[in-house]
Length: 134
Image (spheres, rainbow, N blue to C red):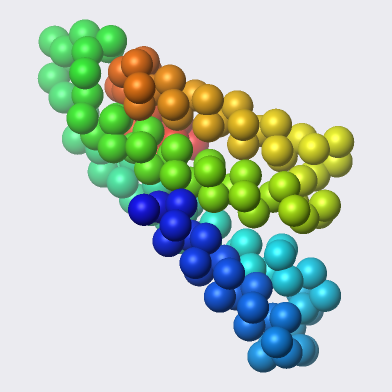
């Protein structure tokens, strides 16, 4: 759902720029980059708000760090969708890929970490902080 929603927003932004709806917009020459701004902003805000709420409302200290933690699982699930969107958005755009494809590598590694947290309940306690706050 996260990936599909962000992809639709990205496509609408890119199409608006390609059809000349915002010809004076400074990034009209690179519609993929311009279309990436709003979905990325929405994703970051969503992660920051949820991650901060969860991190500040931590479970009791008696819970072991390796225990199942539902908010961490939710954050990891959102991150999987977000990273799938990021990969789909960055691969076609040379500028979004970064020098030597560093941003593609970053998104692949973050996707693998999110899958590890979601599928194997690894690091769910730290997910809200690293996926949301930092």
